[in-house]
Length: 359
Image 1 (cartoon, rainbow, N blue to C red):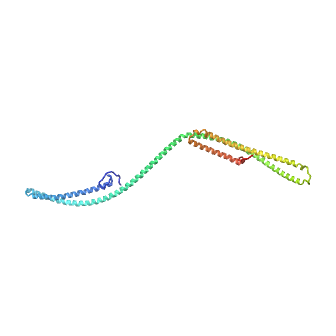
Image 2 (image 1 turned 60 degrees about the horizontal axis):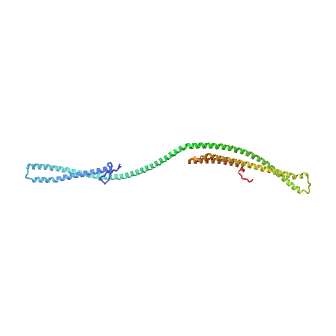
Image 3 (image 1 turned 30 degrees about the vertical axis):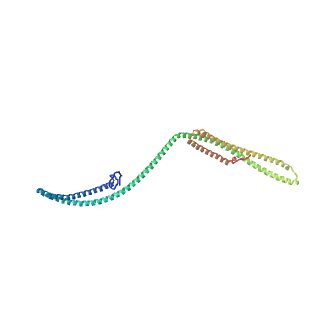
């Protein structure tokens, strides 16, 4: 795997590799083997050139017949030794040349193998580089998203801390408001208890009057029924008497019938008048009870407004005003339920209180 890319130019294949890169190492090995082959070839050619140039010297010496014979003999011996040395060198050169050919063959095979390895390494390096770039982009985008999320969380934490500080500052005020509202609630409960007691008293009085009225109504109804029956009998009797007037003489009891009839009529009128008066009294008492309940409810509403809204609206913030409005709404709901209970009680006990009558 390729560790890193450096800006170090190399003459092989026009690529740029790091000194630690396998591609660079393979390239160096190929270059070294090629240089060895070239140096061996150069040495072989140099020896061949020497063997070709030295026979010319021998001809030059043989042409010099006027020289010293001893020197010539020594020169001949030297040339013989030199010839033997050259033949030995030639044999060694041929051996070296064949060896160099073999080495060159092996080196070429190694070069081809290394070139293939270099190609594979280049392909793998490109693939690895693409994967590393992809991973780096993914890590970079992930780091940016985490940074954005961290900034959002830090801003949210700052807002929460500010809200917490504001709540800490408003906490004493809210506690005072709660204490005030608790006191107002106790006052309203006391007033509600007093109103309930008054209502119970009025209700008991109303029940007593209702029972009395019911008894008197029953008595009056019974009396009216009896009087009606008597009037009907008298009317029938009067008709019979008028029909039989010519056949029967009048007696004293029949003479008293008109007086008794008038007395009965006056008694019926008196009872009707008393019944009407009792109904009017009952309606007045019911109206007084309803008026008193309504006045008590208005008093509760006025007291609540005076204590919780009118005197403190100017000193409240928006949040405190909303909280106070919610509390007033709760009080109104409780008051509405109380009024509903009163109306239900009136409907159960005496629904005529809620009727509108023309007197």
